[in-house]
Amino acid sequence: MRVPVSDQARAVAFWTRNFGFTVARQQPFDESQRWIELRIPGADTRLVVYLPTGSDALPGTFMNMAFTADDVDRTYAALRTRGVEFVGPVHKADWGSSAVFKDSEGNSFLIVSP
Image (cartoon, rainbow, N blue to C red):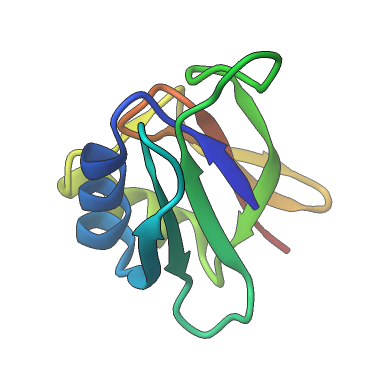
């Protein structure tokens, strides 16, 4: 999963501090940025934080991805205490619960649970 950012160091700090992600790979990519892969605990999926160029998506958009939580209410409360900004309260539906949060770069993500 690729996430556009304005500041790679700030993005790494956000994801490692608030979500417990770890840096899986970090190396020079080109003259302006590094290739940074963040490992998601308990998953094979990795998050790549990159500085967009040209026609890439810009930071501050809705990311077409969702994170699954066993309990959205509990996750919502825990992340809010860490300073993570949510767009609104937890939404309950017949299929489950969801909440939208923003990362350090203004990108919006969905947290869902069945």
